[in-house]
Image (cartoon, rainbow, N blue to C red; front, side, top):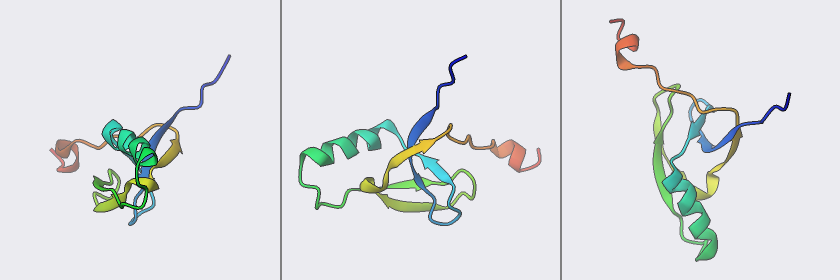
Length: 81
């Protein structure tokens, strides 16, 4: 049996150090930066699915993360309903 190691593009939460998956749009922007002036700081916001902390990240911080992205628990489950 052949095992395929899955990975995705993401950043690490600045509060709890858990990985945060980023959208394909951010990944595409990272590729475009390499073609243009890399000294311009491109940023985006991301919310951690573990601690719900939202912060601004630099596109250059996006890296490959092993595994599969976490899924956010539904609000109904968190509210106890």
